[in-house]
Length: 570
Image (cartoon, rainbow, N blue to C red; front, side):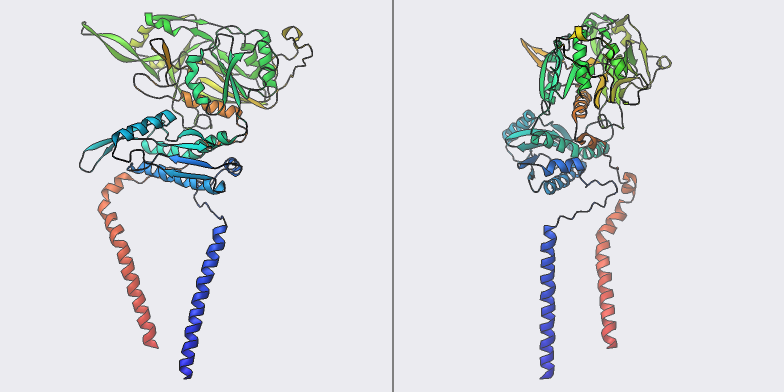
């Protein structure tokens, strides 16, 4: 009887211990579910959000819904990109207090071809860039499909596209890695702009023969995703620029008067930002239709002002062996003409700086009849950084100079291109001296009470010695003029980095939250050795398939052995 009672007590105690353990596990799980404890153990902290990102997400007022069009049967590298997007969106969701929701969508799903084509057109119109994907199957065949590696961010009824696949030069794996590196910036920049209470205004200045609006239409439309864009003349009116976060001076052809220069100077002194795109040598590209043109020195009366700010644009044309080809009509067999590509040293492929957020991971930028810049002055309050430069094989020629298409038929002699890495775009940051310091300005303004500032607030400007960087081609169809994508080669479809470079320039100039610094993020590329994988394929297949089974069998045998040994002693 006693033994039976003891057994019941032991069983009851065991059940109580079991129920207590289960209850404890459930309670601990519930407590932990309310705690947001997340630890990033990766060496490069790839799962840790930056402080600017956390600040933006923590101040969201309304919900955001994101549709990611990267799903379905896609190659393994793109699956890695998809996984990275999902992981980052999970972090965004947690940091925002569940105000962000998302879903992955396969745009190629469904058998109805018309519906798929309609969706493709809709996504393209919304701003997602399609990519033709050629996939090989196991039988040696290939198939083609269209993918949209991007997302649509929906906020308060407003939809904004985000394309996150990087197509800069390099291997496929490197482009995927760079895409992953830029994910946080691309996403949070869009979210920050959408959720901001105020939108920065940017103005294109007119009045000095700047590039026409139709020829800056592409960059204007893309900048409109981030800013309110205006155009207008200064007219010598003090304070007319004060409402703008930045102004763009794109390819002036006429001399600046002193009144407008004073307005610009005081705008900068009060913390204004300026993107200068200036040509000191005038070249009429349209004249090349007739086989030749001429390059002439064209001063604009802003040279002294830029010099005071720390930059001098040299009136010389750059030639570069690393250049964009042009198409020439040549005789074939003395009978018929055909179009052939020929290197055109006047259209250099400019190198972006690899270690600055503006230019990191950018494609080469196409220039046309560019000049080059010297940074001047020893003022320690002004910091200077070269953003774009020529290649190691470049040189300069001084105006006046005749430029003929026949030059494209000549083979460049490398030893003559002995001026490497000429600066073409320079970032200036800091405190600038006024160009009108110690000058009488009463005759330059109607504001007789104006007291000029002789030293600026902390501010930024970017000087680019080529206005054509911002100029898009225009296609004429009847009476209609259609702007073409900026930086896209109409013959090859190659996309250069002009658009991304200029957008990054403007975002850097007006960035107050440090979001642009996210473009400096660097992840390490850890690839498997493809040769070793092929050589040891069978070995690793056996290990992966048989290994787990062998471990389970060995574990079972050891457990059985020690259990038998334990009870045999008893």
